Length: 594
Ligand code: GTP
Ligand code: SPV
Ligand code: MN
Image (cartoon, rainbow, N blue to C red; front, side, top):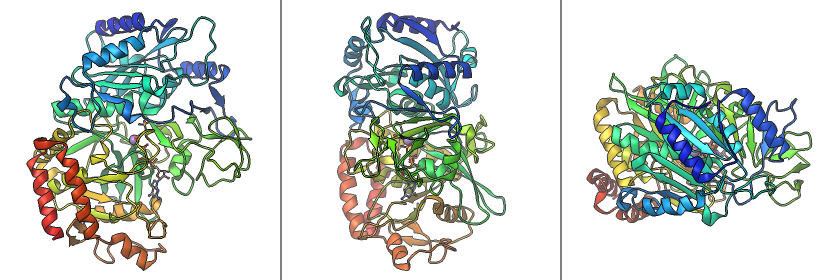
C-alpha cells in the first residue's frame, strides 16, 4: 500500500529518515493483518493467546510495570505562547520541544518495523469525522488501533491527493542494536517520555510509552486535545463524554452525554441495563463525543471511536453485564491476570479464582497480599459487539443531545443529583466539577482535584477560553441547549459504605432527568440547584435505608462554602481570562448559600 497524497508521502519519508526503522509497513486494517501481527507478538513473547473456547480470538498483554497509565506530568501542550496552553497544561516552547524530541527520535526505530496507520475518527466521510495518520513502531498499537478506530485503504482513498490529515508520530523509544533481543514491552524511562501536542499545526508527537492514551494517539491526543482546539476555532465541541440513548416505556427517546473524569463511570453508564421496568438504554459511545449544531439548531453528537478501551477491574455480570458480553471475543486485554484455564481475571469480576498469573507475570493466589490485575488494567473491544449498541451509533449525522451530565468521585459533600437552573448555571456546574483521582493516570497521586468538565488532562488550550467557548455554544443553541445535571454515584457514609448502589440502579436517576426534561415532574429548589422532591426519584423495588437516602440528598452548605474558597483559588490561576459570566455564577451561588 502507498498513497497519492503528497503531503503524506513527504511526511512518511521524513519520519523514516529520522527514526531509521529496519522496514516500513502500511497498515491496511484487514483481519489478515491483525492475525499476522498477533501471531508475531505471540511468537515474540509479547502476547498470550487466551483459551479459544473460553475467549475466542483474544489476547493478553502485560506492560512494563513502569508503563501502566497516562502520564500527565509528561504531557505537553506546545502552543507558541504559553498563555494559550494556560495554567493547567504543561508547556514547553514548540521549537525547543521539537529539538529535544528530534534528538530522541533520531534512530529510535532501529531494529524495528515502522507502521503507517491511516485511520478515521468517526465514520469515514462523515462531515464531523477527521482523518489521522499514526506512525508507530509498536505492533501492539497497530492491533489496538484496528479496534479503536477505522483503519485501512478506504481512509487513504478518502484522503485523495490533497486531503487534510492529522499527523500522529509515536515511538516506544527503545531502539534495538544489531543482534539485541527485544523485551516483551519496550518503552523508555519516565524522564524520556513526552506526550506532545502542537495545536497550531494539528501535530502530535509521542515518545517513550506504549500504553493507552499515551500511545493510541487517535484517542486522547487527537480526539480530545487537538480536536478541542479545532472545535474552538471551528465552532463545535470535542468532549470527554459518553453518549447514550434512553427509551421510556412510552417509546420516547432521550439522548444523554455525560462527562466524568477517567475511571469515574462513563463506560458503565454508557452500557446501562436499567433496573426500572420498561426503560431501555442503547450505547453510542463510552468516552468521547464530538458535537456540532445541526440544521434544526440542536446539538448533534457522534462517537469518533470504533471500540471501547475500558477499565477491567470492577467489571462483572452484575455491575456491567453488557460490557462483559461485549468482551466475550475478539478482544485485547492489558495487565489483567491469567487464570490456569487460560482466561482473564480481575478484582471485582465476581468469579472465583484460586490460582493465576498476575499482571506482572508472577504466580498469584488470593493470599498473595497484592492485586492480580493492575487497577488500570484495560480491555480493548469492538463497539459493534456490544449487545445494546444503538442502531444510530455510526450515523454520520449523529444524535441530538437532550441532556448533559457532569460529575466525579466525591466521597463527601456532593449529593446524588442536582439540576442546573439554566445553561449558564450548567456551565458553572461543569467548571466547578471536582473528583478524587484514580489509577487512570500514573503520576497524579490520590487526592481531590478540580477537573472542569472532566477535561483537565485533555483540554488542548487555555481552560478559561474553553469556558468562554461553552458559554458561546450555549448562546448559539439558545432554547435548544441541553438541560444540565450534576451527579455523584460515589458518596459514602461516615463509616465508609457506598450510600448509593450505583451501576444499573443509576437508571433511576436518569429517569428523573428525563421526566424533568419532558416537564412531567416539578423539582425542589436548593442553593446548589434543583433536586428531586420527596417521592419523585423512582426507588420502587430498591432496598435503601431512609437515613442513607437523606444523607445522599443532603446539601451540606458549610462544605459547599469551603468548596467555593477552593474554586476561587483555582479560578485565580487564570487571572482576567476567566469569563465574567462564571464569576457572576460564583457570586450568585455565594448569595444563595448565605
Ligand atoms: P475511563 O475509561 O478511564 O475514561 O473511565 P470511565 O469513566 O469509563 O469509568 P468506568 O465506567 O470504567 O468505571 C471506572 C470504575 O468505577 C470501575 O471500577 C467501576 O466498577 C466503577 N464504577 C462505575 N460506575 C459506578 C457506580 O455507579 N458506583 C460505583 N460505586 N462504582 C462505579
Ligand atoms: C482515560 O484515562 O480517560 C481513558 C484511558 O479513557 S486512556 O485512553 O489511557 O486515556
Ligand atoms: Mn476516558
